[in-house]
Amino acid sequence: MTTTTATPVHYTGEERRKRIFAIVGASSGNLVEWFDFYVYAFSAIYFAPAFFPSDNPTVQLVNTAGVFAAGFLMRPIGGWIFGRVADRHGRKNSMMISVLMMCFGSLLVACLPTYNSIGVWAPIMLLFARLIQGLSVGGEYGTTATYMSEVALKGQRGFFASFQYVTLIGGQLLAVLLVVILQQFLNEDELRAYGWRIPFVVGAAAAVISLFLRRTLKETTSKEMREDKDAGSIRALFRDHKAAFITVLGYTAGGSLIFYTFTTYMQKYLVNTVGMQAKTASYIMTGALFLYMCMQPLFGMLADKIGRRNSMLWFGALGTLFTVPILLSLKSISSPFLAFVLITVALAIVSFYTSISGLVKAEMFPPQVRALGVGLAYAVANAIFGGSAEYVALSLKAAGMENSFYWYVTVMMAVAFLFSLRLPKQAAYLHHDL
Image 1: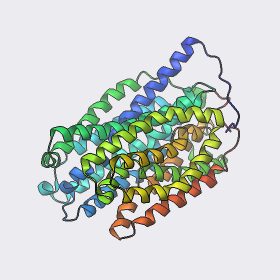
Image 2: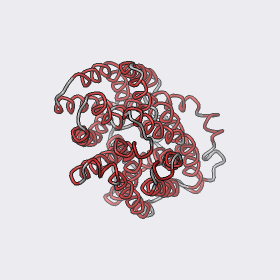
Image 3: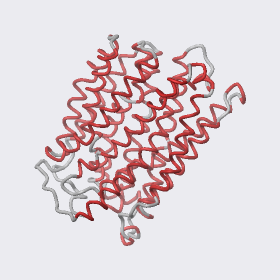
């Protein structure tokens, strides 16, 4: 990745408008996808008893986290399938199919009967719905990251590519914000009885709107690219780009783990470990996620100045040094404001990675296998490390070894730093192919 200040390339006003519209169109669909996926995590404290009866709330959360993690296991399959579709049949087609599948998964969760109604079939059907959503999101990240990196303005790619995580975080933010709104109008019994279904209905409806938005996008691949014999070929990916794949896998493992630790798991951590009320935790996470979302373009601009490789190294180094102190401090405080500050600091560190993660990955692969390489590497790392974050954290807490999780995250951040050292100082691809 370049370590010098990038020089903006001149575009006509019409070309700039077209590319910015493409960024907005792709990222708006991305927002809906991630809202649908994350609303599960933020609603879990209310619907867990409906599917996993138990006297121990930690056991209930462990079970729902296990289903959440299972959805991540579908991501490598989704990354492979949708990456192949994107490379062989176009980025646009891949993004439309993925959002349609997400719509179906959300609608299914919204309509599920509870354990009291159909017994063990309730959690089985919940798992099935999450597997569909996991398959969808597994393809969403790689294709959207590829598309946005290909339409981003040269010289400002870090800034424009950062909007993938603006909308990804925006999806989380809207998910937790909707839960906060419901908390104002429904009491806890109502939320547990039926209120938790409302966010999934909203998500399914929004996915339909997103489908129509994505129909307007312009395809970035040519017919010749899509008909190339290596297009979407997993064999070609590992034959010619194995080192790039391993590098992306290595730093994405730590990036995914710390991202989910300080976003989706943090709400449960504040309630289950720190001892805060669910409403208070939701307020804190709403504010922290909003600031985190706003940070992305700023850190993307910073990466355009100091270089993507340097941003990744700062991410790995700061994450290694400060993860344990931040989590231990959170565990021992009672002030909601101080909790908000500490979480925001942690998310600022994560922003060195998230603002440019899709772009850094895309720069490692040629267009014929770009969506496949980005999507599969990301999905594998997420399935193993990101999706299991809540499950590992809650399991260690249940076993009386909660602090071990903090050190686990720290070790993975050190691994991310070491793999970031492997990043080239000059982008291998993407700096000249558009």
